[in-house]
Amino acid sequence: MKGFIFDLDGTIYLDDDIIPGVPEAIQMLKDRGDKVVFLTNKSIARRTDYVKKLNNLGIEVELDEVINSNFITALYLRNTMAADDSVYVIGEQPLFDELAEADIKLAAHATEASHVVLGWDRQFTYDKLNAAFQAWRNGAEILATNPDRTCPVQGGEIPDCGAMIGALEGATGQPVKRITGKPSSLMSQYILDNVLRMKADQCYMVGDRLETDIRMANEAGIQSVLVMTGITTFDMLIAASDKPGFVLDSVQEITTL
Picture: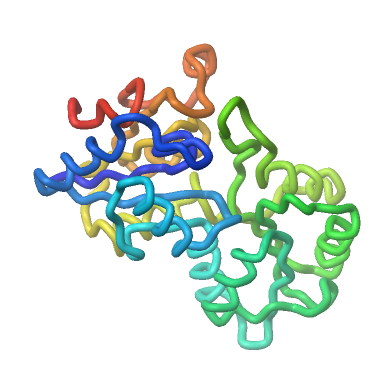
């Protein structure tokens, strides 16, 4: 038995279009007894949204088989915040919702917050940047759901949470204190210990992004598999410091490993 951890955008689908052959390949893994889990840095949708989307695309999945960066962020905050701490959030409604559902106290005003969480926000503004900056000046710890500079879509890429991180780091002159999503060990260890319940060398991380999917796998001792259906080009692969153990044209070939 092996464990397979799949990224979503650029690996399983692009926008609302499944990558050809993916449902069949994943079903073959399950039929032979392997464990499958889906792991995404994307903070603009809820875990339940991903379950619905995957099921609609022909991949049968349960809620406990899908982990997003919002979930890991909430877990980290729940384990580290004091009783009177609160969080100021920059992001979209799913991030607010999933933090609130985990009983994370949300701050009404940035200057009251002990923590700031940066997520992907397609309505990001100067006012939001200034609010996060003022919270930082007041001593708030800055976290980000993920470092992805862009998200792959049909026909190209669009800016992701890395753009929000870059704006705040440009103002503070300091890096954010913690990334909770890939390539963070918070995410890899949760998947290994609580979802797959398997040793790292029994598992494969399959994704399209070198600096998140592949780096996390390599640092955790998970076997790394790059697929060429998303962000990474062959020129990027040649120049990269984060090298995958395997390179496939797409997830359709995963059963050949």
